[in-house]
Amino acid sequence: MSGPGRLLRSPSLVIGATATGAMVAVAALAVVWTPRSPTAMAVAERLQGPSARHLLGTDPFGRDVASQLMVGATTSFAIALAAIGLAMAVGTALGLIAAARPGSFLSGLVLRVADFAFAFPVVLTAMLVAAIREPGAANVVAAVALFNVPVFVRLVRGAALQVTALDFVAAARLAGLGEARILIGEVLPNVLGPIVVQATIQFALAILAEAGLSYLGLGVRPPAPSWGRMLAEAQTYMGRQPGLAIFPGLAIAVSVIGLNLLGDGLRDLLDPKGRRRLPSG
Image (cartoon, rainbow, N blue to C red; front, side, top):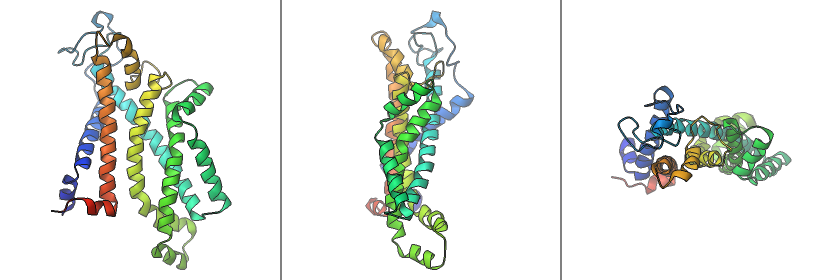
């Protein structure tokens, strides 16, 4: 089956890409336009239901919920992108170094440091960072990135060890290529598939982590909108205005489920064994 046809026969990929694409589009749109100011307060309009003026109602401070959700999407995706991008870059480099000379002191040191970093949950890491600095987006990026570096170290090392055992890598060594050129030119392109799949899944977890940290008051600082803080602020008013919790909760759910489905679809698409599992027409 042709490439486009194969994509359409993978429901996870189609649904995941559609949901993720929709949320990314909302986040991108919020950079240049929102229905109303997400931070402007209007006490006279507090806790209103959905209307033509406020599509999803208003919060306890009279702020437009729809606008907050849109800017919250920008916040969540920007933080997740920065954190996972940083973790992927550092983790991939360290994973390749660990795979270059398995069993060496340097390889063992990389793995032990990765294990040590992985022992600290993301919330605890954020609390430690916040104890040194004030809570903010940079702290969330640092905490989420630090937690995810070991994931990519282990993944890249395992995949790279499999690739370095193949004949074309041995041929590259016989041709006199240096270790760095072999790792970057021969090994890295052949492990990009698993890296992309894992990055998609970790991206979903990063969005959850950002929401959780903001819910606890360790994330982005007011008045910048955040889905997690919207949930925290909605607790007191669940009986009067349940939409205050439902809408950000749905936004988080759609983003996380969409990214996980996208990751599953990409795994089927990029993994040769996975491709054989796809229906052929």
